Amino acid sequence: MNLRKHRLSRGTLAAETGVHPETIRYYEKIQLMPEPPRSDGGHRVYDDQHAQRLRFIKRCRELGFTLEEIRGMLTLVDRGEVSCERVQHLADEHISSVRQKIADLRKIERTLKNLVQQCSGKDVPECPIIDALQL
Amino acid sequence: MNLRKHRLSRGTLAAETGVHPETIRYYEKIQLMPEPPRSDGGHRVYDDQHAQRLRFIKRCRELGFTLEEIRGMLTLVDRGEVSCERVQHLADEHISSVRQKIADLRKIERTLKNLVQQCSGKDVPECPIIDALQL
DNA sequence: CTAAGACCTGTATCAACTACAGAATCAAGG
DNA sequence: CCTTGATTCTGTAGTTGATACAGGTCTTAG
Image (cartoon, rainbow over all chains, first blue to last red; front, side, top):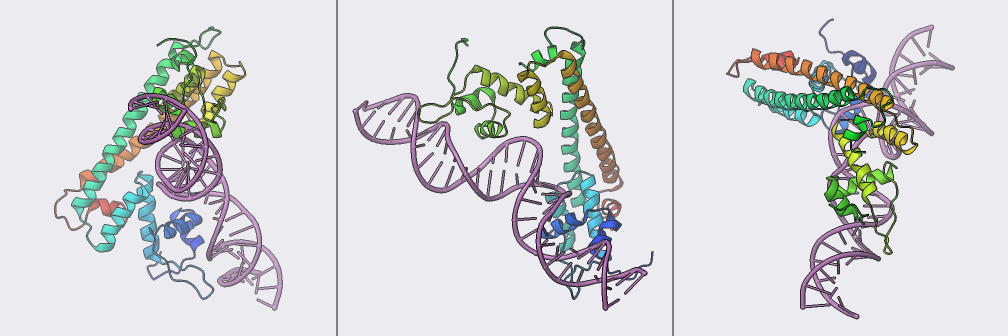
């Protein structure tokens, strides 16, 4: 891959980053991505910087950051205020919320497992699952 | 608590079940809750059966079932077709999806932890977090 | 040059609620 | 009985993070 400035259409950018074309337009609408220059006919023309930024957003989404959290990070980047410390702090906060979600889901898993175990699955008249669910 | 038929206002039902009043109206709109009788003035009047059904819905929501999954269970109940086996099957399926979510979150957690660990948080010029995020 | 494909815009949809505005009703105290 | 303040009524809009149209325009390969 050479490093000169590519001119990427929206579809090409989508294919290169794995982000749905409509999603790119959506990110532009909510100002997460900048408005790119346009061709004479009005089509968006992206370059490698757009691709880089979009890949960052995608990676963060995969890690479960909300768009607002990502916006926060990108604002730091855009202002040149990004520091190792700050990003680490944001990541730490995010880890906490991920751990909380895991804990919540584990509790749900335990409850469901107990419920299912209590039930033989056979023709028991009173199903403990339904009972436990209070119906 | 006595067992005669109570006449509950929406607000009272909400307070008794812990379900937001607006949510009750929403459940009625999407036909998860039946249309209750009305007072002369047009206000909804609920009874204990409504309360029971609503508590079932709430419990299932807490366990992460979607409204459509709950609708499926309630349809079985409404048709008198509910059986231990069927409910157990639905619960089993749900457990699988919960476990998948936990696995996904754990992967996210590990990735984030690694990222944060690689970063000293001090004045390192190149932040490995930002690097790892490709920006 | 033409025709197929990609792109343009604005709007609508999804889940699962929540929140409003403005009018009507209800319940409790005097 | 009447007032007053709280609740409820309706319909509609907003939330998050996209995705999916319709109907028209542009680009690009052959």
